[in-house]
Figure 1 (cartoon, helix red, strand yellow):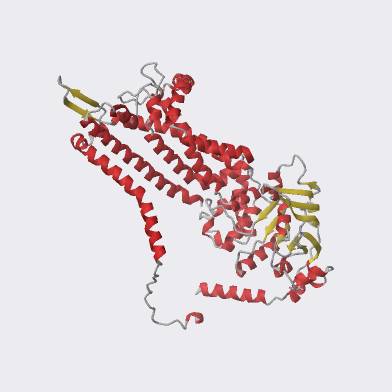
Figure 2: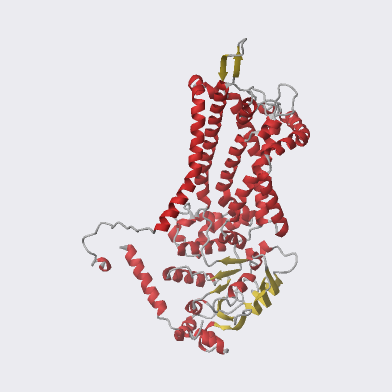
Length: 296
Length: 330
């Protein structure tokens, strides 16, 4: 009975999402209350200047300069292969995880270049958290251990871990579903719950920026809806950059949207503007073609 | 509820699903089945041969063949066998002792080198090291034995004396007489070197398969390489490493020539690993086989059967352990 009901809900949600046509995206984006950047105590935000990226000799990203003001949500949209995920990964130095990866330009966190010589990369990643496309909880750890794993991994000592555990799960919107089974293994959760567990895990080390790489692409509409609610909640206390293929999602969650495009060569950032402008009145013809569904 | 109403009342029995394979498929299936079964048949025949040969001795000695430590053939004036006693006990203890020393010394080295090769070594250094370690596996064990005897012995004797001096209060490090040459300790060190390649290869393969998304998750949470390895790689690879260690143990227990070359094979129970006496089942067989009469040959075959079953058991246990520990990390 309950199963039937909840799947009905999901179906409704799906319908609701599908009926949102590109032309109505602007109105969705317009519904969001516009946040004023820099009004909370989150540092001065994140900024990139002339970022280029290579894999081996292949130039995949060209001259991207963007400003992510503290306390805002920015969506990176664009067709597959336009370099938006690569760009996202330059923001917390996960780019260099791939052995042949190279980079030029500057990424400034509170005005300091995170690629400056002598920088401890682990400290950067503590301040700039990341949620991946595929939920990736640690299967050998329990739900509770997963949330607190960042503390262990980065060797951070905290005394009130129970409080932290609860608050992270609350903020990720998962507390009510798992509070009675924190000792179970993370792999026992559904895909959407696992993804929220990964968000809770990222929150436990208290990052000032959270990067999300298509966090909902592997999830059903119901879970997607819950994660979007979570994003809106989190945006009150941190800076969020989200890569998404789903333009409705960009319209629903983001204050600003940046459009990336590649013509087969390196990806470029075509246009960035408040989300409602991108979807109603973009300056660039290519952006307009993309958001109205003419290609991509 | 309304969604489910129009379900038919009668549920049919599941149909049998079959397919008619092509002739070529059938022939190929027969060929690979024969190939696959060959090793099993050979192994079975060897076990059968050992059992048939050894059964007469086992019938006489019964359980004391394993528990008793006496291997004697008494001849009368005409050279006939007057009385014989066969008990493997001392050699079994020697087998376990030297194999355990090998695992205790060899496995940590192998795991460290596997971690180095997987996560730190790059480019030509990595390639060179991998092929060198693989080459070690193909190296004749006699040469390991010679090297152990001629080169390693001198320094190992010194370490043995140190161990005895500072840890001599622990019974296994005590010695009845100051003879440190050709001890189970030194044999164990040589065996340790011999099992490093296989344990390294298995560990490296497992570490290599660590899911990338978990590795990335750890790094994205601000983990250093060490913290990532501890939180992700070790839990994932634990089962495989245990399996590799057990495989190494099995190898070390069955090793013959290297132990025979290094160890002073004396038929006595020796728990004191630093004392130069002892042996293992395989070296006993090698030592006695040349001059053994028909009865003793049968006894040696029985010893072979025991060794065969022992390594089979060790491998079976390693399987169980891999299944028990291995699943948790995946």
